[in-house]
Image (cartoon, rainbow over all chains, first blue to last red; front, top):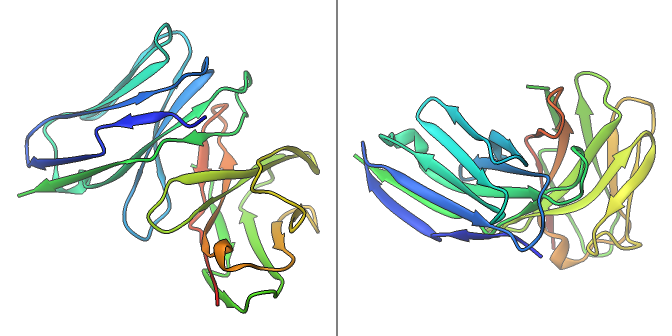
Length: 112
Length: 113
């Protein structure tokens, strides 16, 4: 069963913040976040391993609540380059090399 | 980030024809994955391949699909008799040294007419 992402779409002005959520009904080994621009391949952003850690990457960070099997991606002070579709991919296989099951995506649009 | 190329970048074929999509990682990998993405939809797992054997496959990966590592370096995905619904972007993914991280190749756009 695929993870559920929310919201489906977000529209921001430059400098505004956004949160994208990813929820799974399965116990997860890891959660992966990707950004995809139109016509391009998904680009890896970060991985969250079970253990509830939080990671940061410049102005983009993420958390993983192992008890709830939920992950959130935080985009702060958004830039035009943040526009794209964000996917969470979940690994419920129990090993680090398990397949990824992707959510339906969240379309983020940043306007000047 | 491991580098990987995919060929061709775009393939147009007639329904019922066979197609072979190629993935060439810059360095040797024991693990690789194939995913597909129908236009406007989410990315879907097809198959994972470890040490020259299929380790896991999805319901999509039926008898019409096969994967190989023909010469020890590149990986191929073959669709024996293409259908209209096979039209999609096909991505191979390679794991990074940091276990679990999968990096996607640029993809092959398959159009079945």
